Length: 269
Image (cartoon, rainbow, N blue to C red):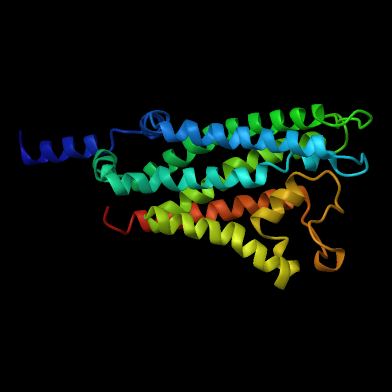
């Protein structure tokens, strides 16, 4: 074989894999890990269990019963975000990333396939958990308190967007994993940026808190009433609309993934 022929064959081999093939590889990696299904199962079960507990203890029909039923979504998102981190960092820890990038030299394609497969999986699980929690929370309400219905204003939107938040927080974690590459540090950044920063901002800068993920999910995406607020009125001047909140949450995930993809192309495996 001549040098020119070998070079041509090498280029074909390097460009052999397309998005579909790379996504299939990433799906095999994701579904063969026990931690994936255990984490998603615990996340969904926790959201449903909290919905039932809150439903049993609800005594007034005047609150936002849909928001109450979906309250278990917020703490459950931590596990989804951590799983997103592990999707990337576990490959660096095991050294598998070298084999992955050797097989698919187009690094942005690798990250795009990871993100697409993980997003599809967490979106399906998140929607299932959100709808199950909604119906379970309604069924657990005391006699005399009417359960909310999907046909009521804002209810279906709140349930669907709450399910989507599983996907978006998971992608944020995946992006942080690609940026930091170390599991403990990436999980620390996720927890600090999403949960701890929210708690600090709620007391120090309540206006800014409305733009942070936990407040967005708990009070924009899962709420059916615009006046729903986690703090005292003086500390909560405004809450983003559901669609603005979804856009902001999507922006966080997109920035993390873009930064992770940019660094992936410029650093050694």
